[in-house]
View 1 (spheres, each protein chain N blue to C red):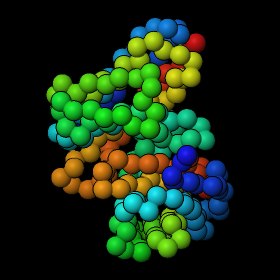
View 2: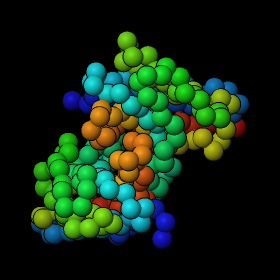
View 3: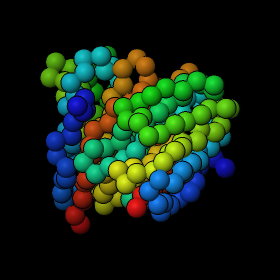
View 4: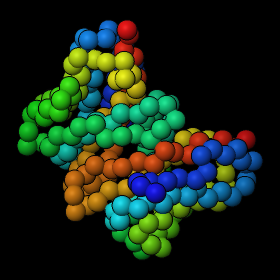
Length: 111
Length: 113
């Protein structure tokens, strides 16, 4: 049973607009959350993370929001650019440092 | 080299054959991991190693074995491959003295016929 769920397999967005990716988790022991980006034929690369002691973390065009009570996090990309077209994985970690991943969301940015 | 390398890049294998996927990192990270990526399932942890000389089972360990003789290398072995092991395999590493971010290799695409 997957403990991290990304219920939207795909997302299409116009260039310059905001992309919002969602992620839900079930394990209350998770205290650290990460987003990874993956291009075809490459390994995932780390994008941004957030600790459970925060509810927001921002890095340039990327912002992650965490709602602990709802066990929900989201990644906002604004403005979206063509190079953002990729698969995005949500991941979560408890204090054992192992990561549990969601199924991924494929983002397509339209010109 | 810098980061994580994996070999081979891709492989087609007959069912029942033995196969070892290689992974080497040069970041002196103490922890290493093996994942498989399947459509609709994301990345699932197969085995991990917190430090040289120790290994542990992940979410989907059956049919796979690993060893960690030194810090840099973490090979994954399929003793007798089956078609359900067709997947893309990623090796990753992390420094437990730092954050929880894991660094991934480029992957090995394995097809078992």
